[in-house]
Length: 158
Image 1 (cartoon, rainbow, N blue to C red):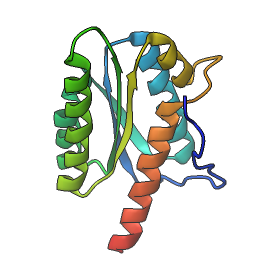
Image 2: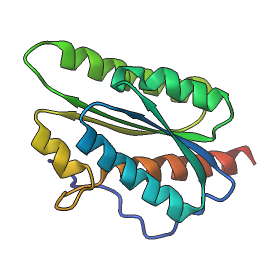
Image 3: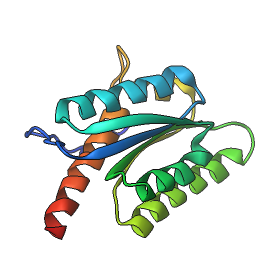
Image 4: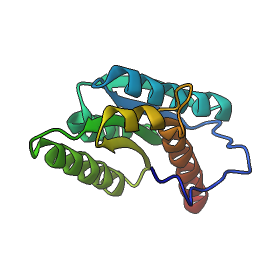
């Protein structure tokens, strides 16, 4: 597990006035629920308005993220869990989710916080889900990134 080199936020995020949609897959409920809890904690602390939308899995994240941003959201936090299995399915879904979410951000000009975990096993996900005993909180990190980028874009656009 990396974690090394991660930015350490020293300032509070003021998300007042920002509309954020958390789009989360439903696979691997314990892990995805942990990611959601971390994201919601950061969004609550920032003062941003947000809502949660659930989709079946990580493959569906890009289309829901795009719809949320086109409907007026300032940012999306995309959360999903993809665990490697014995077939190439892992690579296809991981690439589709990653490429799709990147395309959504570029096409809409709005931030997508990337909280899609691509894992070799369930233990790695539990270590990153922000649960009690986890080493990382990737849901919180994705929300933080989405908020900070939305604030930068708002300032750039004046």
